[in-house]
Length: 105
View (tube, rainbow, N blue to C red):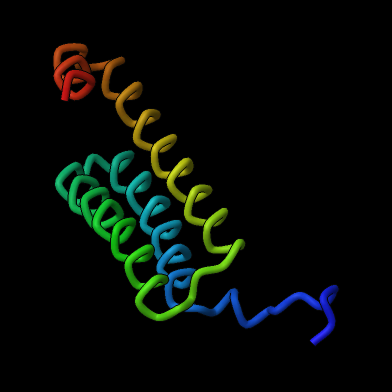
């Protein structure tokens, strides 16, 4: 295969599919937060956190490490972390004490 031809199959590797799922979980988590479904938000956040560790492990075990996957994983991590900080800031508007407890943790 020529060097300048992109290998599109990388987009469908298992670790990258997990990354797409993590993006969906971030969006669902934001929706849960704004619907005051805080237990669901917490469960989705913890699921996202667990999947973050699993995707890297699977990439190595399945031999599916790629430059795209490495960058995509960091991108999803930043999106997830950004959404979490938005949620913490939003809570702090109404419940300052809870926000400070979360920041300490």
